[in-house]
Image (cartoon, rainbow, N blue to C red):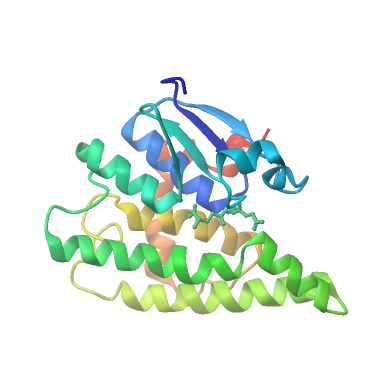
Length: 213
Ligand SMILES: N[C@@H](CCC(=O)N[C@@H](CS)C(=O)NCC(=O)O)C(=O)O
């Protein structure tokens, strides 16, 4: 494996979007290799050789091949600690991980391509079923996240005054919420944090509209 940093991703994948933000925030330049999920490229032998799970993102960095977006962000947090993706104190780290998992392990998996394709197959009106599914699970998940932000450690960002792994998970999830027209009127903290993150170059440059092939 070369020492070049290569991200195998898909422009609309929120797990990929997380890693793009993290790489930008640590100032790591990388080459993107698109894996077209809609064309099924993630199930092709070429990609399964990179990740037998058939998922994006996959990141080649520091001579290693890494999978799982949160494990990648934690790797960057440990190898580039100046980025501040995880707080210095143990209870702060627990909170940032809990917020991150609330999105990455609760909302995201049920809204994944493979799951939603299955839901659509079983429905009479697949499009309507998909929209209702997304609005239900993203809406409920983000409402709970909004409540979790009612905590003294919430600051200008999900935890304190600078972006952490929790914000890196939140922003792509908000992108998805907007895509599926989820009502966020009951989530003012989330909306404000998303707007604050959008002002930071590393977030803006990772946006799907900026990287779409
Ligand atoms: N837990 C994994 C999830 C990765 C994942 O689900 N990626 C999606 C795109 S956001 C994917 O490759 N989906 C393909 C499929 O569902 O078949 C991570 O965080 O990296």
